[in-house]
Length: 415
Image (cartoon, one colour):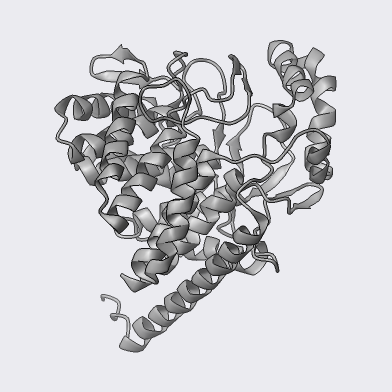
């Protein structure tokens, strides 16, 4: 016997709950916008303690000689975990392109759905973003404003990164959709030229190309390829550039090629950074879904389904809340990350019309954020660790991402 269909009253109750959550998300986003205006566009960051010269050198030793470097990095890990506010003794607040891109996208979305006056805030952040483009590069591109110590060496501040640059493309796209100013199209086309011509790729199988992180490396990082694949797919479709579309498909093929039997992805496929974490899983998945919506390739959607199933089984706990790692190479003191919540909500919104469980997952994440992560002044808790809660705001990690996620929830209700 088939189950009885849901009653009209149950549909009404569900719609009421969604409307209530959307209103609460909008309220939290507007409070954050007021806090941001007061706090300012610079902030601390998750990498502060590793950006200062002493921390960076300690991390470099640790990457080369783990046991020799452990006593050197341990004090920084403990400070970051137990006394995160001490970073002001070792570093300084900075402005971050990724944060400005997300704030711009959030304000442009508010302008389109609620009040056109928000467009001016979006344009302020976009103008600041354009001012931060990498010096010495002919096309528009972005990196970090600090020296980034990796297991492959030091990337100097201003090194172009394919994991940063696509957000500027989307911010310019949002500006064009809001204002119809042609200059934003020119910026988007310049960004795509950079991604196509300046980011090297390596063929590892017929029709499968792994993208590097920057113009100066040859790493095989999965999320870097996912970012580049989406960006070239979106730009190739908009600007009718067949060569961009071909490179997008080959780059996305590497993401599919790298997917493990359980649906997960290691961070990198070059023998280093062999971990599976919540954040980068979400980043890979959202780029796959966005690329699928442009290209329509069914294999992209199938891989996303497998990846989302892995996310649900290994990166959400029994309460449906995010855990930082499914597999880690080293012990971690983090218990919850704001970034994981923000990207989990974004992912649920992207998948809501194709995965029947996505909306419930997004609702659980959003409810928890509104209940426990929004602080009285309007900014968000940054992370929960074994030592308590870190409330030092990091615009890049992930105040800006959460602001945009809350706006997208609110905008969905009005569309």
